[in-house]
Image 1 (cartoon, one colour):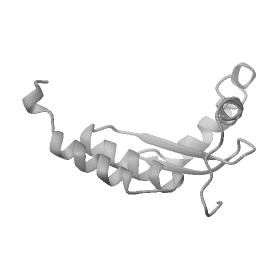
Image 2 (spheres, rainbow, N blue to C red):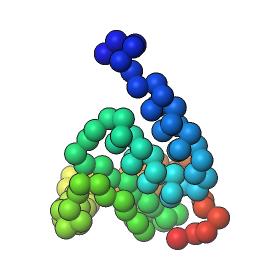
Image 3 (tube, helix red, strand yellow):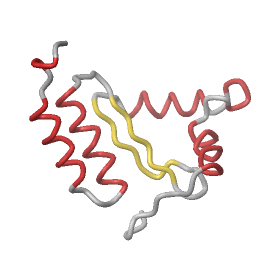
Image 4 (cartoon, rainbow, N blue to C red):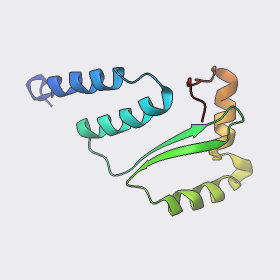
Length: 105
């Protein structure tokens, strides 16, 4: 893509929109919706974990909730939990401080 074809104005709008949201949950949902306007994609997922690395909420775009449930149930136990989202979140949690909203979910 040539520099003249890059949608700079739309990119600035997306950044301004995302930057106006100040809590982690709303920011994450807004960001994935805004990114989709720049880079079309079929499916998107955002998982929200509590301090115990348990999924307490999810935002799905173009993903069947039933398929997501089956995915988590299956991958939670494959290869000793290697692909377990909660286990991976817990490992991540140990390296980086959690982000907390003013209104805990």
